[in-house]
Image (cartoon, rainbow, N blue to C red; front, side):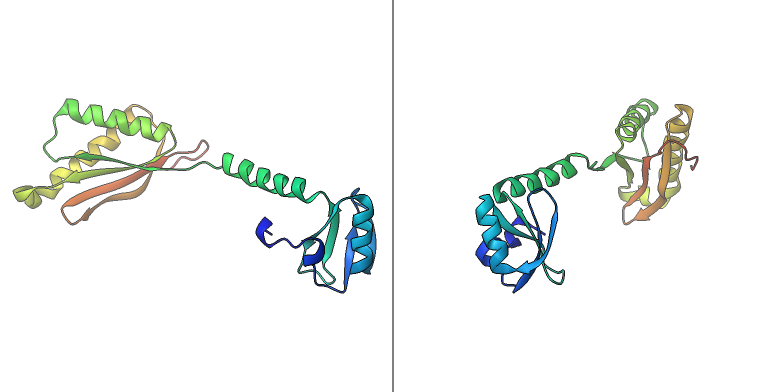
Length: 179
């Protein structure tokens, strides 16, 4: 439950609650007024931690510290997430050998960083009549990746999208042998 929707002290509307004290001991089901009094004696807040339970579960704790810890958990969860980006490398069917090697080196770097890579061939004018040249370029990229022993998975094989032919590669996790 988010901090905005957590009910504390006088916001709790239930007649009786299952009470947990500051040490984590269950004090059983008690009337709401008695639970508020116990919290006031301890100098802490009565916080509804599980509102959907019957009766709702309330805990005696320092509300400010509770909110801080909730936000810290969310922050830590975000920190441990890895974001995979889709990088795009564009080429043309008439690409020189050095340019192809240079762009394939970039594909390798992106894959090693753990990103997905979309390799795109752009066809202009009369080049549309010879899409097989674009497919050959994409196959040469795959062959160069194999030569350099780069671990990749072909997520989407080469296919046409209007004036573009593209394929999507992703980093191969260790233990898989799919190409």
